[in-house]
Length: 153
Image (cartoon, rainbow, N blue to C red; front, side, top):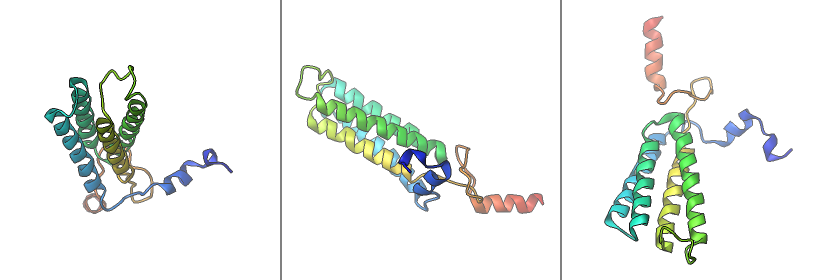
């Protein structure tokens, strides 16, 4: 059976669900965005690269704000896009198609940001007490949910 034939339940088993440090991973992704934006503001290349670094950093901060599974999916998607963009930029660095005038150092910054943001997104997935994926932006912790249920019943 190939990898594409896995069911949704089997693929969920491959993700680290309800990792105890998922909030720290979200903060780490946001801090990586802040560091990249600051690196862009300090100016490590041409004006176009500076703008691209600041935009990528701000996007990394924004996708880490929602938290929960929305933040996890957003972080993984943004990390993937940044990595693909960095690899494409690396391929054209020494050609006339390098419209950003990016150096290899700039590309390494993009790749590092993409790896941190996407990697942190992998550890932010949450499930409820029944093992179902949480659909909301932020889930209420199990203790708070148990207290609310005890009060209403």
